Image (cartoon, rainbow, N blue to C red; front, side, top):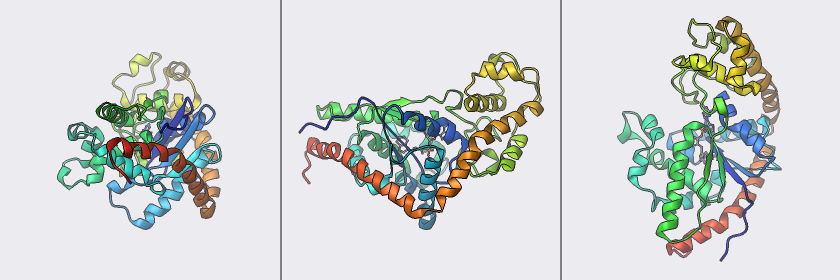
Length: 339
Ligand code: TYM
């Protein structure tokens, strides 16, 4: 059986529907997803099966899913043009993960920094899903024979693992079924947006401090206040980007500003060189508000319409199911399983 033809560029990427979108997700991934809709066939999904790697109250899980779907649409993902869905509606993700578990090596997973960070000192108490998480992520992209996977810097290692799994499977079974996906880490200065409280740890949904991140749901005042309180150093901003070295918080804030305005770091510094953060922070807060406020407005409208959101996800799932089914069928056959 030959597989149906795939477009030259097929984009696949996902986000965990736990907590709301923050500025890191938006600049590192989502706004690039939005732009890629013009260039390629795009599949964007809510990684709800991945969210099982930690306990979440089922009702919270259900409402998080709709909230994240609304946040993506509010950010500019068009559910008619792109295929927007949640993993759990498509059992092929979990099935392909199981087939790939035969190919992935424990040694490879042991090297995953996200597992080490998230399990911390309690490795023995971590869920098996947390350990196997990158194999499910590989299944997510290999199922659709994705060519490009737009992600932030923190997901790069997982994508490299997906490539290793694809290549080993193809070699072991002497097939060309899987396409080794390219990680697409654009985002420039925003490929890794850092916490507002600590320039050495990334902005994240799981940080216990709400002050560490800008959420899409933050009011203009809350944004201005978080930026005012963001950690910085007492030095003025330099002219030369090289002089930002060793100044993690300053690098982060300048990087966010550049990503928001589409300027280079040099251009931003040319405007603010010699000035302290007292001058820079209000301009940064304004730039963030200019991007976030319209998205927040759309999000508030979309959130109320649960049935419309469910309908978008169901119709996206129907289209995704059809695209993934031939790959899964073929994978079963290649490994010698009948169903
Ligand atoms: P998640 O939900 O943590 O994040 C979604 C996307 O946002 C990016 N991102 C960031 N970018 C810059 N700075 C930050 N501080 C920042 N925080 C998050 C992430 O890199 C990601 O692109 N495992 C994935 C979800 C996933 C997936 C996939 C992604 C599941 N299957 C298949 C791609 C392909 C995750 O937890 O992303």
